[in-house]
Structure formats: structure tokens, C-alpha cells
Image 1 (cartoon, rainbow, N blue to C red):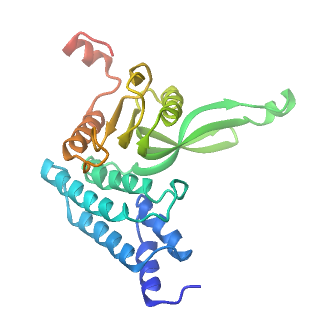
Image 2: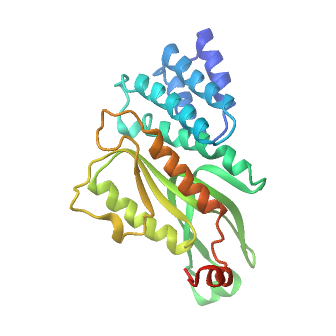
Length: 272
């Protein structure tokens, strides 16, 4: 039961957040379970509000966002009551990516491109129960993979009397507080599936720290890049140059011609 004035005000504020503010919505859930204190809520509210004041995606804007992220992460790192399964700490980076890319995506003025965590399309197949039933129904089945953050478009597939809503990512990002070998293997498998369904999708991992043996080389995989935000030392703050490189890589992909073979041959003599 919600009793205090603080809880009522916090619920009102958090309930109005955009759906891509997944960390704020995580806080809302935990607030209702009496696991959020007023100082934590106030810290989150400040982080959200200060990011709302930054309009743009120049280097100076990104550095301001990284500074705000480090300040908030420094505070939340002292909170030990949440396990990794609670997704409290991991959702901070997911929400940060929304702030990082929101204005860039908006600059294209496309009304069907969205940002946030999704169930991303990987492939479809047909599974009729029998020849008789296949005659009357398409029996479309869609495989999907959870993605922490994506820039995507929602599409409606229609086959005869069957409709399916699918989310097609053009950028797909898995977010980690740390990345170990088991997590990397899972991401490699996901990247393979996502790119089978959409070869023009950029697949990235963004992790705070990297705990995979340096003998393992992810180059053989379908992962386009792994960004380690704290570089070589877990005690480092999140590095703005890494975030700027991440932003630039994604922005260039968004602006590129993905399948204009004629232009690629004419300009560069290359097909891919």
C-alpha cells in the first residue's frame, strides 16, 4: 500500500516516463515493492531532468551526457540490495542509450522509427498441423530475440487471414555491466540469428567492463563491435571518447545507403 507523499509523487512522475526510460520504469516497479528510497528517486529524477535539458548530439552534448551518467552511476554503485537478476544496474546503460541516440533519430524526421528495448524479429517459418489445415491457414510462426536497446521499425506481416506484428531492428545493442565468455557466446548466437533476418542490422555489445579471455577473438562472429565503456580498468569512469565513437559508428550506419549496389560500384568499385 502506498502511503507517503514521496511515494505518491514518485509514482506520478515515473508513470509518465517514455517507455524507453527502462531504468525509471524499473525504479517504479521497485518503488511499489518498497525497495526505493527518496534519495535514490531524487537522484534518478535529476539524471532524467538534466538529460532532458540537453538538445543535440555534438561532441560537447555527448560529453555532458557521459558526465551525468558517471555521476548517477557513482551513486547507484553504492546500492547493494539489487541483484543482477533485478536488472536495476544494467538498465542504466539501456536508458542512457535512449538519451544518446534520441535526437539523432529525431533529426531524420521519420515517424515510424522507434528506440528502446524490443522483441526483435529474427526469422519466420510455417508449421501447419496437416495438409488439410494448411489449405485454410498460413500457420506463420515468428522467432524473436529480446534486445536491450534497438533502433527499429514495427511492421505488420499479412498472409491470407493471418497477421503478425514484428519489430525489425536496424541497430541492435546488448547492454552489459560486465561481459564474460558465457555472455559473449550468447551474444554471438543472437547476432547470427538477428542478421539472418535482417543483414543490414548493426549488432553491437555495450559493456562497462570486459572479462573475456584475450585469447578469444570475437572477430569471427557476426558482432560488428564491442564497446568497453571503462576501457581497461573497472575503476575508470565511463570514457566519453568511447561513447562518442559508439555514437559516430551508429550515426554513420543510419545515414548510409545499405543496398545501393550501383552507387557503390560507381564510386568505389566495390559491391559490399
